[in-house]
Image (cartoon, rainbow, N blue to C red):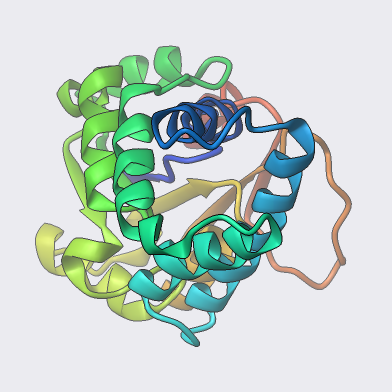
Length: 229
């Protein structure tokens, strides 16, 4: 019987892609960089993913992600890299202001409130994530927030989950379910911690059969079927 539901935030409860697009366009406007085109958005996302993958592999720091991605992106367009820190700071603020729920996300967490302990588990920046939770109302629904920047470990490293076990004072892994879209951070993190995993796969992406996932869903309402089994 599950007691603790660990929710990833970006691309699971919240539609990060839409928020990302809007926030980048706002930052381009703020720093007088012209319109941020669809081509530029696509190029940035490729670079951004590369840097976050390096973080998950333990090959780069969080600061290296936040600044390195924009330094590389700006190099493509001869944008002055001296503004990277200020640009990133404003971009984080914008992300916090533009939370957009994925389908059924709000309904599901509201339904589970009081029935289970629900925690946010995220590798996102504290600035953006705290604001997202506040502006989306999730801070009033979820019971606690674990942010890698605050606790010193990122998913999928076991140190991240050890902090959760310390907080709950409960290491019975059968009581935990992590739900997330990322195979490399959420699912692998859950596997590393020995807890049950639920892969949110709304686009029905095909993966190798040897990846050991407890549950796979394409609609967040299916979480209710899993925990009521």
